Image (cartoon, rainbow, N blue to C red; front, side):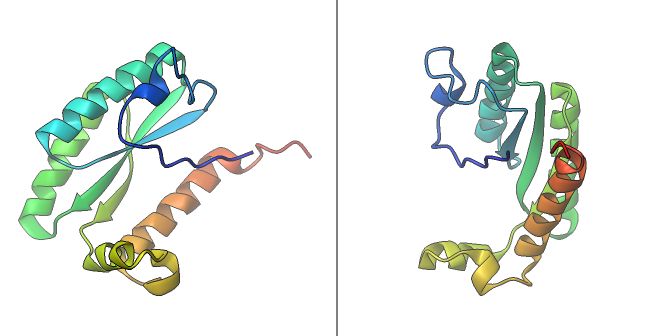
Length: 138
């Protein structure tokens, strides 16, 4: 079974009291290269490990184009390595995603060929390939 949950901001889902995520096999933490985001991500990884979540990985979001994007990538790669985790996907900064959110629409339905949607679809394929193939007894 696969459950994808977009949790509210905050870490209570990883606390022993709440522990909503205690039994997941993989926790994806969405990050972008800002100090406060990385501070929260570091705390999230620590709590996930305390709960016994076996695998934590990152999804890099809002990656800028050009040289700035290369700096973003380098910073996030170093951060992931420091946490003993990997970055599974790089979602580019994409105005089409912002507009779909503003309209309350699923980006896959309204802008399926935007770079952001294509990166998210690639992440889905990566997750399916790594974690789902052979996972169902048969």
